[in-house]
Image (cartoon, rainbow, N blue to C red; front, top):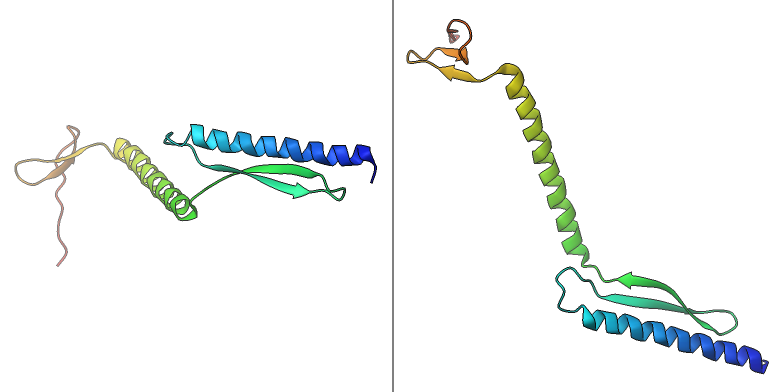
Length: 118
């Protein structure tokens, strides 16, 4: 191993350590923030022995994330049903019952009698 490669390996280690320190300080600075998630730095070693930061990972609670996705899906389903019913209601018009129990659409047309089957 040459002196140059030894210095490059040491340099990569110092750079990686600096990146890790930066990640930790960011975690500490944002610890009180509501929407901040803890981050960690993934480090690997190359074939030459140099340390290299490969990615920054955000800590996630998988069960909480799954519950959030389920609730978003349920809310989307309810929104779809509500918008469909709004269109349906606008198409049919409003139905009202008069004093005799006749059902009719709004103020339009004569009363409609409903007969029960026996």
